[in-house]
Length: 610
View 1 (cartoon, rainbow, N blue to C red):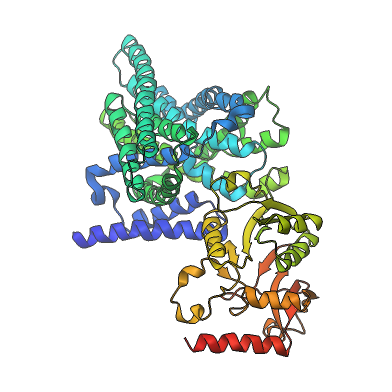
View 2 (view 1 turned 135 degrees about the vertical axis):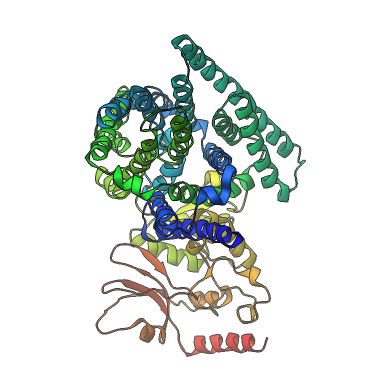
């Protein structure tokens, strides 16, 4: 028994995190791979039985996990974004929800063997999109303009609204009379909004007070915040069923929009926790699906139902919701092409199906497989071509190939000029005004100030920039910059020159001196670069000939710095990785003479002697 449970837990982690990595590696929708992985781990191979693994803890775990995910989503919402899109978002989560609900319920009634009660309930369940599917797709697509903010707000706000609507319908159809149903509906709405708002704001106020008064040490900020989120969700749910999602979401929004208490650590922690919870949730939910039941419901009726959701319900909802806005037709089309269903729909349908079957509703057992087929279908249809659709409509930001160069010394400016000449965006940052003035005189975009300061990220325009190259003479500054911007660009996209401290690369006695990937050559530190500049060494370029050259032969004569591909992408030569140039790629390099070789040899001797 214990061994089987251990296999189940291990399966969740392996299949969940593995699916996330494969999705990142091949730029596929993570949710789709998680659902497929869950089905493989559960009904196909029998490695995971969620009900046996977690028993009665399964439903509470799903609910709490969704609340934490919505709280994390709320932390990403800023009221400043609502200035131009507030009306559209309000319409989408009100008028759009009603339109989707009506069309979905009508389609379900005539396509499936459902009575009106189950059809209306299914319509309520499927109005949600949610951050679990929207945010990963937005990160993949990188939509420009207002579209990204609209979809983010809609996806996060609509989850608690959809959950409340589904619970409302569920309670109404279980009521014994029309008057009782009306009373239940009215009281449920009032109590959900009232208790959810009060408890959510109270939780945000508590965290704000603790952070503002410095009553929490750094190592306890995340655990206590997590404790408060779960407490808020639980208390709100105890006061009114399913109001906890609204409370958790509102708590996140309130914390995100206060100005004085710093929540950076909380935001970072929740992003990591969200990935783990999201992976676990979809694996668990997909593993509970009975494969035979899923295959049995895979028919033309489901295909028609999906077509109506995608081609009728969503476009009508978007068209009416954006009728009087300044959103252009391309953005409207993309909004129509982004309504995948996520974890809230899966979890609610799983919870309701059992109660409905116990209360004598025929065909209630078909609710879960149909919802899962809709999730798989919408994620596949919306997700796989999402990047292509965004590019064709002209609403996708280009891949951020630009470079932020820290340091405006002579060598850094030479690199910056070349990168700009090749058509890539480059921004030079330095705290020395003379260096910045020199960069400005060369026509380069600049930032004057300390990029490690608290306000730098608010002032820096990083649009189109995806890499950091740190070229200052200060090893600690280079490493701290790499550490900070690794959170923004990803650790594989932050680079720094080799530290001036001799011997560290071999001895590893002070690995803190290098956080970013070491550039060019492990001995080519700032001191040697300065000597090259003083000797008027130029950065040269040659087009790579794939037939007559190999990169190994080239590196024996020169120190390659970076290459610009024929697709206008920059690839940097680092100690840990050598790019593989293709025919026609431009390699930028510096030639090394005998004197420089001797200098490098000296550094190597110093390293070996440590």
